[in-house]
Image (cartoon, rainbow, N blue to C red):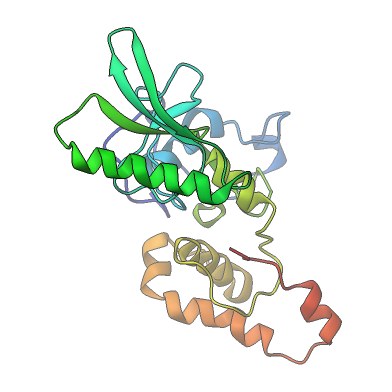
Length: 242
């Protein structure tokens, strides 16, 4: 398979074919703009490659562990979204009992972070209490096309992101914009794969991209250092503003 070689343990892909990560022609896509194989193979393969976890905040998500509509899903030690909407629950036979909850950090950031930290302390203080757990709100795992083109299913264009990270990234990342600053770690392999395609015309696998990461990332810096007007650089600035 090209690109997303890694697979997670919770395989849920209904199709049996190996995913074909590439750009698809209009005739290969449906009326929704997605390739026909998107709904049967590709999106599942991307989630599996990420081990069913958001590559940005690391929240794990599967339908088996979430509530019916996917609103609430359990956190684990790898989660990195302190202060975002969540709750501490006590699991009963009749369902979860809410012990503590906190709103979005944009409302009252300090209070949300403090309540989340307190919930983490309680979990750590009573490690044997398996019926207690922290759950995050609306972190359903999605797959985001980084350049916005649904037909472009090259591996570097497909990021497994939870619902909240997806909405955040969607408004910040514009692949075609010149960005002369260092990228966040999760984004580096994806944008490096894009640079290999954009500047070198090479279709690199993820393994090849990661082995040449610094070389490929430097391609954008070289482009950014070419003479250009101040207005142009200012316009192109907000590519990856996390």
